[in-house]
Length: 328
Image (cartoon, rainbow, N blue to C red; front, side):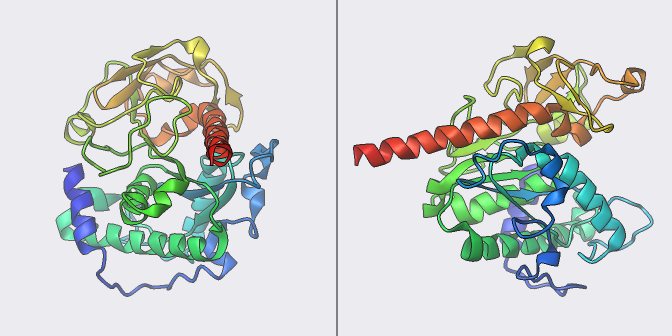
């Protein structure tokens, strides 16, 4: 099913759509974050700025267009309610990568959540329409801002769907792959044959490929897991390798909704296509007991782990490039 979605989007990606508001990425108001616009969204989480002069992070936010009151398949980028939600999720989620490079995050004509379960009724077209904006934003970024800098791609859920397509369109077997530090794609199923030349990274300082994971309560398997995630490539986002288990003491930190970071919050267990976690040790822990699918927390559960790992990978890429120059 998930491969069918990606294949369908690739087949249709050159289709032209009419948009309520045509995104113009020369307009800073069409960016959630860029170096020239609204760094306040993540500045509270940035204390180390040493890598901002070296690398870039292109972040695509997850699905925030979920309210059933909306009958449209896509939401306009000037929708005030959705912009507010987008800014919040970018501040709390996208900030995990904010010390790894200059942040770029475009607003895009996002597809409604129901698109994934109604592909034949308009969902496929809606997802493609959303991706057309992300692609346009990335092209603008490359032409006007990148200047050959190394790149981290990051996205969750629908954002990860679009990152996967960016990898296929711009990196896989192409020269730009040389600038890829890592693509972080939690919340989607990435199969073994997804890319021709982009590897699945299985060590914490590997560069030039991608990582992915999908989070569930320990020993919990659903139809969603069976239909979507089973058989996909996943990393343990505490150890950043294929370790089957990580102790609670190894967990770096969960950025909770109260905006505090809770260290050593849970243990992890790697299974086929998923990461199982124990019930997190956070305030109101009893409310988490009934929660079984942690998809919504794929990033925030591992927020501090991601923050540290992203910086480690940038530094590894930097050392690799330095070694190349010395040898040449």
